Image 1 (cartoon, one colour):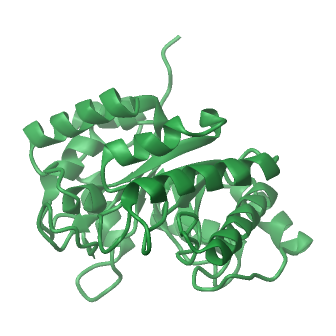
Image 2 (cartoon, helix red, strand yellow; image 1 turned 135 degrees about the vertical axis):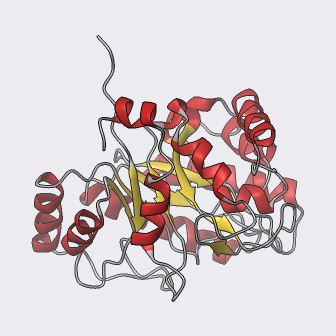
Length: 295
């Protein structure tokens, strides 16, 4: 039997008016998937989830066509820190985020892997892997942790495929961890995916180093800065250094039909999620529309 696919396209939306409201926002934008924070991304602690808000969120999702839901972990977390106090605090915070995702039946939690300050990259990568092993030894839920590819700005790690692979190789349970690729980040890190040849070369390298099956989410962002700049600055789709070609290739790549694709583009006078979603949908070929059963 031929497998059925559908367009998995969404954006990172606010939970300021409630978790269930994020579902309504997504539906109004024509999204089919969604990314949220489950708490303030700029604070360590969070008010415990109330049964009523969990129930409302689950009910709203069930009544919608939004699936899967992806969460993003707090930017404060640094499980690669050589500072034991910060590392321990980060491990506890990551565990809390995973537990909140479980309560909300969220499929994936995206994490910025970490950064080094008083150590080198290799040691930081080893610390990250050990921290994840500690977290997963304590976490009994079903949410999968996704390591996000980074731009390499400052002392941030995981800006190469090899660095991501080095973490996965050290994990006790590899099946509980996947990868989220950010188009802006990989471009800024030095992978020129702005043309067909570079795009093909990147994904071939990804498959060789990580295995294409590890890819569980894609962040769709154009880049304000050039390839190899190692500066993380998101731009509207088609208005940055990547241009529309990269996104046309991704949107029509059958390998990624079942991978949620999430916008994290700016909200300013030059565009918003609605305009970026329209741009992306406009890149779908006739054949892709037929395969995804969308108009």
